[in-house]
Length: 96
Image (cartoon, rainbow, N blue to C red; front, side, top):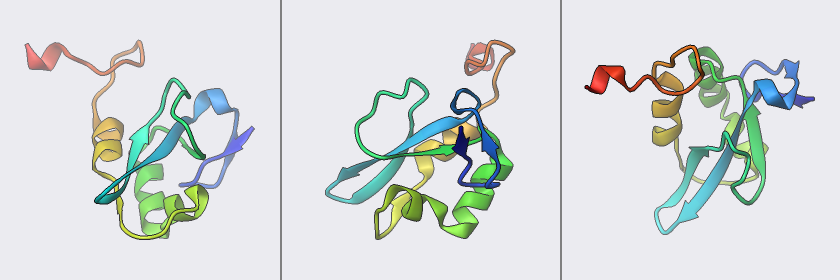
């Protein structure tokens, strides 16, 4: 069981998306980690735009991942907002 950083509800880890912070010279950026393989601390969130918006509004990612400074949410926002098919994978048919 894990707690969503957005809505704060508990759910099995298999229902939540793991998020990891990757640091570089510009700061930290949030990366989705569906395979749960990236190193370091992870935060868990429902793959739902409402939970993402709530987590950003509450500044929950910095607290959960124990990082300070400006955090880039761009890649995570694209992943959350991407349309998905019934298989749970991004829908690539609109790019054809």
